Amino acid sequence: MNPHHQTHTTLRDRARGCLLGQFIGDSLGSLVEFQPPEHIRATYPHGVRDMADGGTFNILAGQPTDDSQMAMMLIHSLLGATRDENKLPHYDADDCRNRYRWWLDTDPFDVGNTVAAALLGAPGVDSQSNGSLMRVSPIAVAYAAADDQQQAIARAMDAAEQDAQITHLNEVVIDSNRVYVAAMVVGIRGGGVDEMIATARAQAQTPQVREALDRAVAGDYHAYEQHMGWVLLSLCLSFWALAASRTSGVEQALVDVISVGGDTDTHAAIAGALLGSAYGAKQWPGRWVATVLLCTPDEPRLAEGKRLRREFFATDLLRQADTLVGVAD
Image (cartoon, rainbow, N blue to C red; front, side, top):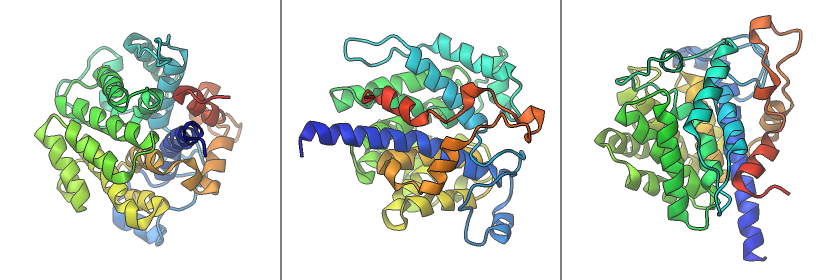
């Protein structure tokens, strides 16, 4: 096989897998958001494996919550950005901030306190919440196709840092964003799980993030469970799932993240994008992919406050992934 064709094929599949994983995890996790693990086990003894209408917010199967609604705003910004001589987008923090604020003005049915306060003009210096990590996956897709892998990682980390600073100024949150996109860039370019984890560890700048990555590989996320929306819990769970996927497979790894309970839609959106970067779109169960891509959450049967504008639909997600990574036909 032509090596260029193989690279093209890998980029397409992994970029799609990343963005699909974001939306799949979000939708699956929203069924049990805020529930403790024992309640999830009682209702779903084999884990949350199928999307369904309802859940915590009484929305449609496949419908995105705030995690992927914000990610979609980032997708639109990156797609509309000017591009450099290497056809990579110039990340525009002002445009992203405006789009996030526009999203907030649509009165979303769920929004984190730190994100809302920042978009209204009062960014938190101390908050270590997961509201920036949950939306940042499209940046990895947008920069993965750079000619040189180190350039791709550097550009993605820089953009992820700027994006975090729109709502979160804490160094642990920023570092989490950076290592997360670095790992996904490696995955989208065809790297394996071990290389993704090693890259994240090598790029970590704070001891807190390094410890979270080490705990993830050791299978120990329990030190972070006391804070449901803590970015270190989300980061640790996502890399725990990635490490475990080497034996459990991608579907089970995502199901296991949701079974931990708590902020399940955000944890699963973050883990889903990371897993999708490693395994590609073809490894996601077809029933999950179809439900996400076919969901049109403006239907009259939805309560008025739960309906979404078309800008948030994932019906065009595959083309958006292809365009972002530079392999659109």
